[in-house]
Image (cartoon, rainbow, N blue to C red; front, side, top):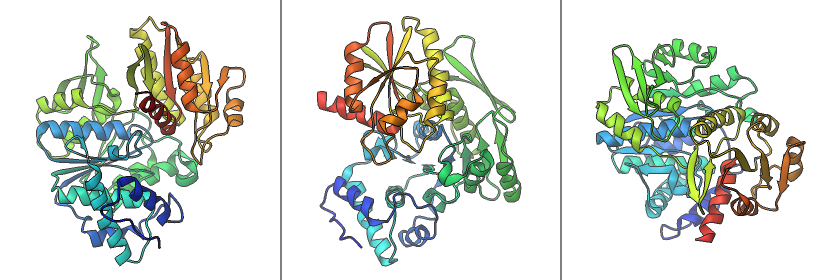
Length: 427
């Protein structure tokens, strides 16, 4: 096995180390992880555990959960992935990204434990366990854990949740999770445990695989539009949440109402004491980079969204159309676009082409990047401009955009990361 860095080495050295310890970056299964987690003493935390799975909306839902609980005064550990700009985004304590040295110290502990077990860990497994080590050391009251891939075999699932949240089910990661909604739902439902509340946050039909798992576990299921409801208020400035015995008027915030409602439902069934004031404050303060993130850059309006599958892009377009409805000065959308080759590029483009006027495309500088040819094939008959890098495509968009044009950056977390790196260089 590779020689480990030292506790005095920098975070990037450790991240590079973890990317080379295991033979593959993704290796679903808990056989190797459980012995290491047991050695670390993180499998049965003295905390309330809220685990969030789903195809899209996990980040917004987990962010909202943590923000509400932080507002209530709980000590909250929030774990999410992937990051967009800095690795530290993945691990937050009471809303603050954890510092480099805390991560390095946790990595030292994880590496010692996996060596004692004579096991290798993938990058994702090692970094997730490091988050758990930090939350345990900080004695967090609540852990909010976002599943990375699937649920049943994801490393997050070594810890049994007190509340299981499944935001929705769509077709994504089909090579890993299966090629149908039911197969993917089966994997997501793997986070469900006996006798716990389970929130299904989508208005789509409840997959049978989730119903079957709920019944097998005698869990308590709460489904959007059946057991709780949400709708925009007439004033356009707030929204209403309703469940038996509860009606709340809540602020819109910056995240999608569907995900806000999922978070509120999970809070209400969790048994945690949370006031309406904390609900309102948490929702108003919840922010998540790269999820319909609106920024002003060089006097241009830019929207960043990490949607990378048809389900996520449908959600993006719903928000975009609402934004354009209230901001009628924008009559054209320019898109800085790239994707990974194992994603459904054709379906994403088909959804977007009625909204986007001009496409500025470039290949990503990552191993799974779609080639320029793949992007071009999907965009046939569209107005397309080609660039060597995403950074050059974004620079062109900034320089050429007129007052009536909106810039949309999307297609992958890596697309957003490339633009962020460009902006950092420009500062």
